[in-house]
Image 1 (cartoon, rainbow, N blue to C red):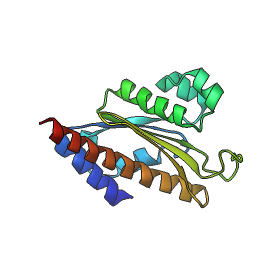
Image 2 (image 1 turned 120 degrees about the vertical axis):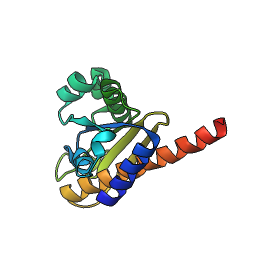
Image 3 (image 1 turned 90 degrees about the horizontal axis):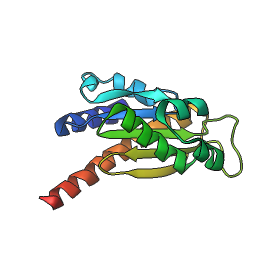
Length: 165
């Protein structure tokens, strides 16, 4: 996890980009991984742990209607979280995670291990994941996947930039 985040931080530094995070089910783990990397402060703005729906609404502007209609664990809310933190932080990129880490809270439609990850920036992406394992495994797998998803968006953005030249 730390090695892939170190590579991500280096890529962001090379590009002159910045990143912010909005975390729900990971409870700050992604931010902790970023801050474990020396010099990450050059690219990592920080983040919000929006574990409760009130935090999602009040800190990063997730509309009440999305929470009511789709629930906190949904693509719509993940996208709104990413957009919201990116707007608050004025960063190049934003990553948002929302899901059910367990051991309780799952439903047949959203079982434990369901995690939505959204990227907002020059390239956007949204991904649903279904991780197996206990709470710690789900949280760590979510952070690993978020790092990988942002790195893939950076690659796509590089390809788009090259086409524009």
